[in-house]
Length: 208
Image (cartoon, rainbow, N blue to C red; front, side, top):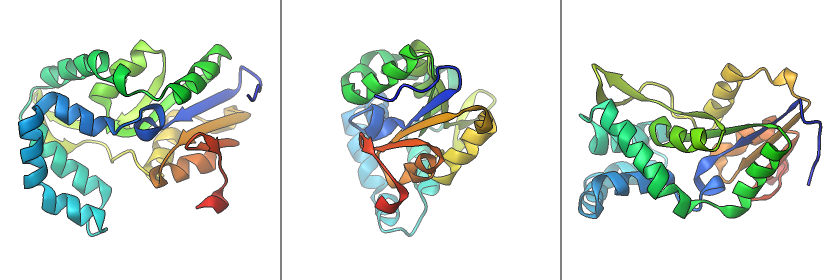
C-alpha cells in the first residue's frame, strides 16, 4: 500500500459500486417504498428509464423523475429518519469490504477521507458521520419542510463531482490525492488523482 505523508493526503471515494456492492439509491427506494410500490414504480417509470438507458435524457433528469415519484411530498424530517434507519439496517449489508478496508487504511494514516456520490445526502451523510468521513452528495430540494421532488444541487455525477470537490477543497494543499471509482461517472474524479483506482485496480486515462 502507498504510504504518503499523513498531513497532506486526501482520498475520494465513490459510493455505489465502490464502497457498496449495490446501487444504494435503488436499495433506499426499496427500503422506503416496499417491494410492491417499488415494482409498480419501475413499471410507471419504465419510459424514463429506457430513455436514460439509450441516452435520450441525461442522468440528472432521470434521477429527478425517479426521486419525484417515490419521495415528493414527504417531510424532510421523515426523509432524515428514513435515511438514518437505512444507514443502520441496510448499509452494513451492502458494503464492499475490500474498498471499506482501503477507506479504513487511509483513516489509520490520518488522511482526509471523502465520499463523493450522486446518491442522496439524507441517507449517505448518516453513514459518513458515523464513520468519520466527509461527504459530498446530491441534495434534494425542500420547501417549507416538504420534499418537492426536485434536486437543489446538480446531480453529483461526472464533471459535477469535480466541481463539487473544488468547491469544498483547495487541492493545491494536498501533495497526494487518491480516488476510487467504478464507472464512467467517476472518470473526471479519477483524473484529479495522483493515485486513481478503478474497480480496485490502478487506473489511467488511456483505459477509457
